[in-house]
View (cartoon, rainbow, N blue to C red):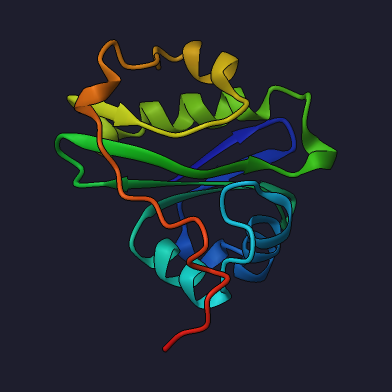
Length: 148
């Protein structure tokens, strides 16, 4: 699927994703995936519904949704290139994702963020009333360790 706004396009075409660009951003500019190997980025893209944002042919943003397409969606690796921020593109990306026909009727949408609460609150995301009900297993150094 594809959406256009001014000179920008959002596409779910996996063939259009610039994997080296997404990898470079995630591994060097994100706080959540520093050092992630390109093979992991490639596998995560293959296992998700991805949304690339483009200015012409140049990729300028990315989000992936991890989902069963029935009950649950997890927003991951959300970013807009630094040179394109402040233009409402993050908001448009969220509107597009939440309006996607394959992502309707979910009981739960979830994400993790350190600094974008204001954006996500505009779309109904909130801190859980009882965070003790949510558990996770976290290995923040996994990309720094050598494979055995």
